[in-house]
Amino acid sequence: MAITDKIYVKNHRQLSSQLETNIPKGAFKGATLDILFQGAGLEKLDEATRDRVLDFAQDFLDCDCDNNPYCGCPERKFIQYLLELRAQGLGPDAIVDVMTDDYMVYAYSGDVLSFLDNGVRTLEAAEALARVEGADEKYDEIRQAKQNLSR
Image 1 (cartoon, rainbow, N blue to C red):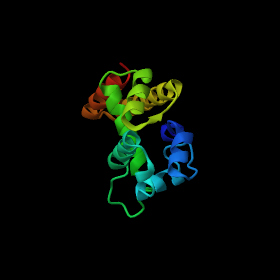
Image 2 (image 1 turned 30 degrees about the vertical axis):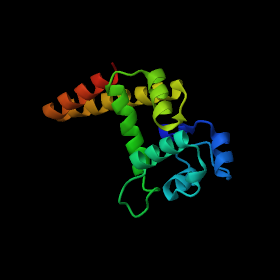
Image 3 (image 1 turned 90 degrees about the horizontal axis):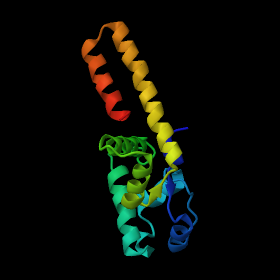
Image 4 (image 1 turned 135 degrees about the vertical axis):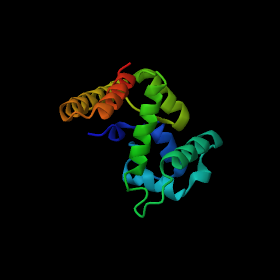
């Protein structure tokens, strides 16, 4: 299961009530993305909530794909966002706090830790393959990325 399947809308019930429609708790579920992408009813939200919802839509749903928002770009962009937070030296608890402050979404710290750990394991495998293939430049690049992620 991808980390984006474990990202949830904070104050989900309150948001559903303000929008006067049911939305899934998952931030990257189809109906949630539809509401954010189409912008229907966002004027019903209080200003602070609307600003965060619009920030989320601008940062993750903005692409030129024909299938937007179902093209996979929102999930890839969010994963990149998580990796950038990690590169800034933030741990799982701090990453959850920042994503909640930035976009009103949250995850469980253990899920973020598992995501980061899986990333390190994947990079270890790629590092070993690069070493076997004699791709020294790629090996060094992957090794550096692994060190940055596992700090």
